[in-house]
Length: 114
Length: 113
Image (cartoon, rainbow over all chains, first blue to last red; front, side):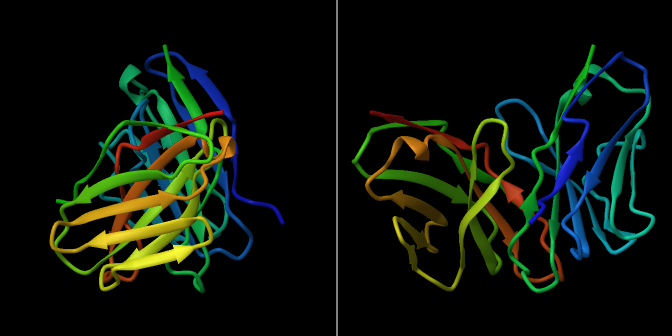
């Protein structure tokens, strides 16, 4: 079956621009997570959705970062006024209610801010 | 807060066993995970263990947990070239109703044919 998909796979933007990164979770998965992975590091938690609501956004680094999941399925991570330090791979994961311990990860979006 | 540490690199010959080590700091009951990341692919959950267990075996994979030292290891028997990847140790609390997973920096496993 289809796994978690993320678009675009690569995004190059200029400093100061606005970007949106999209995540399509596995159908029926109610939990959705965003992580950021910098070069040579492990993924770092950003935000967790249960259904449509953000249950924990404590990992968002500042108010330039925002994420939505209006219908409880697709999620969009939005970054305003991008900075070079935002360059990283942004990973999305989803999890069904029945598998508390297994998050299914997408391939990620590589964001490069010039 | 939680912290997970791993060595950065491990090189083994094909057919040998690989042992990847990890230490964590969270003292509460917790779940501990091993993920595999191959180039261009998403993270894949290999196995996990709850902190009240000492060992878990799944085919070629053996996870050992030393709770006293907060040390976790992943042993891969008969390592193959397809096992070359980055392996992440991770932990999450058992309470809270969801998983906020903290990952280590990853260990790059290189398998030499």
